[in-house]
Image 1 (cartoon, rainbow, N blue to C red):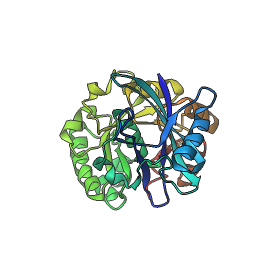
Image 2: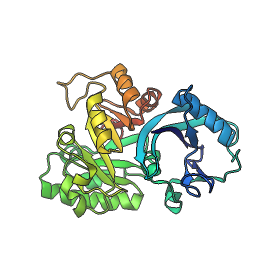
Image 3: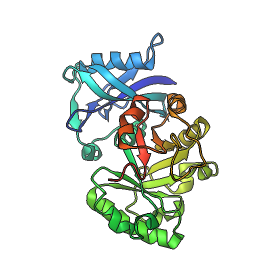
Image 4: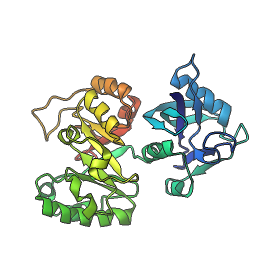
Length: 313
């Protein structure tokens, strides 16, 4: 299997960098994230820094692992170790003569990418905060009214309403889906995996850890390629299961002690670090998170934070 690194590179304007593959190479003419082969005598991190210097003329100074993608083409298999680069020096350009572009998240649909880049594009568009809704009774019973002023562009909203009957959850999900569409946010359905067909505006599903153990593949859930699959995990074994299932992201919890689950002792940041270092998909710290924990979670290698009370303003 060919080992390759790829970089999701951000600029201060919120754009991401893509490059066009040379016509004479495998998958030539398609667009991709910058990167290249990992040499036998270097680590993925060393390969990332070298490739970005050679291809784009920039020096990556701040980056973290994002996910690992394995893809099997008819003529070769590749393992892509993907990093999110958030700081660099120099001006990015096609140092090897290749066309490069800065594009907005909304423009990704206008460019053709190799099949292996599908999960990378989805991961690249993930936010640093994953918002989970409170139960309706916790906000006076009208969750729609409570959410409406709080949903903003680019937000991922997990509709977690475990106290509702399935029919009531469906009605609520359909209403929240409309708000999310209007605000250009993404609605993720929680637990009720069979309701995705009834909420066509939903962006995906979130499985509980218990559901994770009973699902064999994404296809079992009726997910299309564009749908997101999130998973709740509590240890590295479940994070690995989530990756094998084809999940796009996972929450790891509880990191801190929480009001909602006082009987559970927080795993702690050292455990989060140990899990993230081994995980192959984006991981969000969940449990007692506050806005100020975002950069800490990212410093430790996570995608960001997830939560209810500490995230919704």
